[in-house]
Length: 402
Image (cartoon, rainbow, N blue to C red; front, side):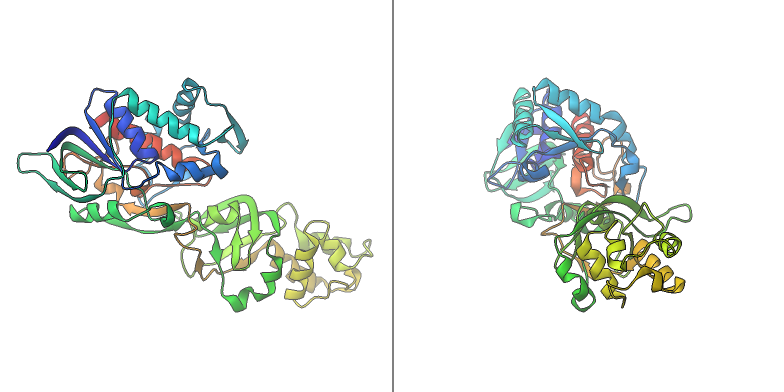
């Protein structure tokens, strides 16, 4: 039986970071993954250029039922630390939008960097290799039964991610291991995902598919000691089945089934007040007036959806009708019937309940030697490089502790 100090299961962002950190401390490490292609989630991220961190990443950018948990790891391994590693490997990068950092060339550079860091510590690889079972050994440590032979390890790190994007190999392995050892779970669900609507309700908007614009979007509650709400200003995209774009991906992590989202389609303008004030001086048709601030096709569709003719003259409309229109556009309230699910979700919200883990080491409190990192745990970042930063930070935290 092959013996190691540490077995890391899952060779994605968090797993490779953890393996490299532990191995460079002198630990004998084996890194195991069932996939035939390494780190597909890194490879496809950021349109193939990998949005590898966000320079402003901090605890406020993460969701969890235990929101303070992520503070320790994030404070000990920061975006600046990862950028220093990127610079060490001479990878060109740039800031694209709101602190999001991307490779100048290819996400493959980040994968190669992590492989090189693993090589620097002489990490042993088992890939493709499926783990059939994991059990505690009588004399301490763990025994892994794999299709490449049995492995004995003093410590095991679960870095197998969540359920998002099954076509590149996502599984529930980490959740099954957590449940096997009696750890509580926060129910997993798709996050950073497009939202869908009832087909009949959405029928007036189907022809608007492809339209994009910057909006304010919010959902949830902002009251009390533990607010659940989210609010973002980002681009929204109409689709045939519902809404997508960064604004919707962001708010989807906060949305709960049965609750509405509120969208301000013209966030820089109090539309009702502007229209009422302009009645005496603006002689244009209402559709042309709205087209100053909205795509013409969207303006026409919204007017028709609210029973107004696009060629109606602004001056002829009563103030009450304009107030109603203004509210419909500045506070468009609509309830999704679901999401596009794990096949389109960028991450999984929920996972191993972090109250079961040490925030310093990521080790399970009641299972010495068993660690959970990355997307497998109930820490979910915003869109824009935050989830990679959690992968790096949690990987380093575990790698320094095993």
